[in-house]
Amino acid sequence: MINRTSVVATSLLTSLSAWLTLSGCRGAGIIGDKHGDKEQAAPAPEDPAGCPLTTGEQWQNFLQTYADNDKWVATCEDAIPCDADYYKLVDTKIKSVLDRCTAFLAKDDKIAACTKNIRAFVPSWMRQHDKDSYGFTVDNATYLAAEVATDKPKGMMVPPPAIVAAIPDRAKVEEAARLNGWRYITHDSALAGTRTFIYIPDPAGRFDQWMLLNFVDGSTEVNVDTPMSFIGVQKTDADGHPLIANRLNFRDYTISKSSNGTFNVQAHPENNGKCYSCHPSGMRQLIARHTNVLEAMPVKGEADFDPAGKITPADFGFKRLTELNNIIRAYGLPDWDGKIIPENHGPALGKDQGCVGCHNGTKRGILTVSTSITQLGRKIYDQLSMPQEDGIIQLLERSEMKNPVLNDDEGNKLTAAFAAHDQIAADFMDSRQPVLRDWLLETACE
Image 1 (cartoon, one colour):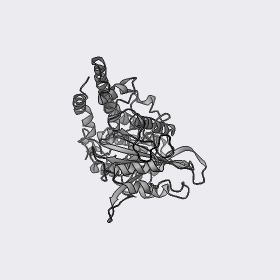
Image 2 (cartoon, rainbow, N blue to C red; image 1 turned 90 degrees about the vertical axis):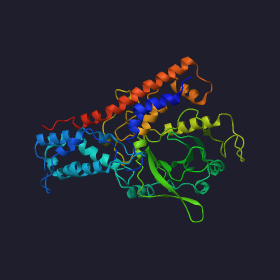
Image 3 (cartoon, rainbow, N blue to C red; image 1 turned 180 degrees about the vertical axis):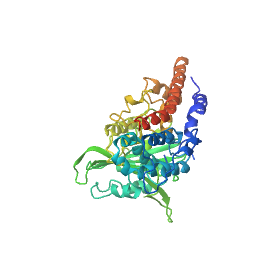
Image 4 (spheres, rainbow, N blue to C red; image 1 turned 90 degrees about the horizontal axis):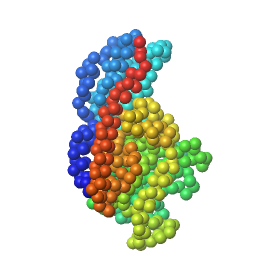
């Protein structure tokens, strides 16, 4: 049997940890820029009232100056906030020039064509790297208001009071779900600790609600330092007419304690979790294997329901996980309703690593430089789930659960899989900037 801890420690120190230091899905200095000297070479606008670039040569130099920069591919996640200085540079030396040249570009088809990609990419990149939005094409106040507008099913974005009242006690949260007939599961989180998912379908079929509460390792109380993540999967309009495709409505509910000792949740416009970064395919499936924590019970209305919560059928947690994943998988790709335009986030990544076979924009969402590198690293390496290989996830499960213990041949096979996925992950990460650069420069200006 392999010692996975040593494998992870060795490989992650050589590759994954380097990427995670780039990270920041919530927050706003990233890393040093190996192309940083180029920033000083950009043509400075001279005429505040007009377009400072008027020839194909000038535009080509402009694109080449800014296209090749590692900071384009650093995502804003939990570890380190976004690079405010680079954000300011993009705003003042790239976006401002493109804005000032709008009229010029409308009259010059060739320059409009060669700048098409950067003009689409820069606003999307900026929304993914600002400090106070979810990264959508509208600001948070507008986005949150639209989720509860009259054209949306009433109550879709309202967390059930029974769940909120049970916070922070995990047992009470699970009990509230169980007694109300809401399916749930508590299992190991992909981002450390444990988490409880709760699934509540609207009785009228207009929407599904999904909420996620986080627990620090070993804790029986909700971690109130992280938000309650909430997704309303909209299936119909307010009148019950089916949508062509499901729409996902995201909210991060801040958990706070009131003066009387109870807890409440509230959605704040200044929240900045970058939803699309972790959800390029829409709803994320749960870790599809047995883990050390994998607990659920039948809920009211189901066979084998025990009101006292003491009797659980054998392996029910995994059966529930599989059931929830089937529901999530059936949603398909969402209609982003114009709030996200995937093609504006850059080219599809992972062609040489086999990713686009699934992440093709039809079966699953494309992977771009906006996609969370933390999640990618865990999917490719920690979970060995991208790309998929027959039998490997089962070996990983047995290695972690020691049930049954791997023999030498199986251990060697799993070790080889980690090494192969480590290389795939490294190759994928190394490809991101060159692929983006070539896309930004794919049409010549002269």
